[in-house]
Image (cartoon, rainbow, N blue to C red; front, side, top):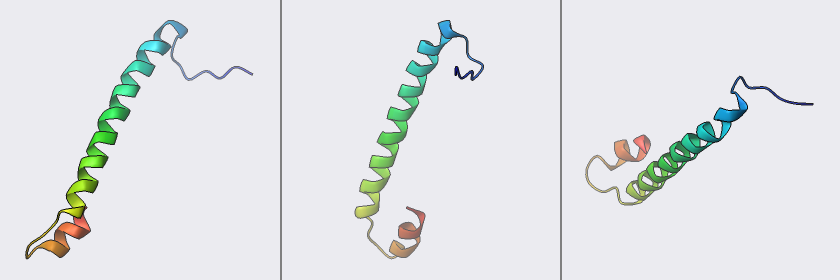
Length: 52
């Protein structure tokens, strides 16, 4: 059974390459946000904690 997602075969590699870039950017954002979460201090700690 062949699955079709509406992308021509000649474009699949290009789409996959762009998706890998987006995934990498999202992972960096997640990592930085998680690091920021562990370094929250100050009077508004609780609000920042909830945000992260």
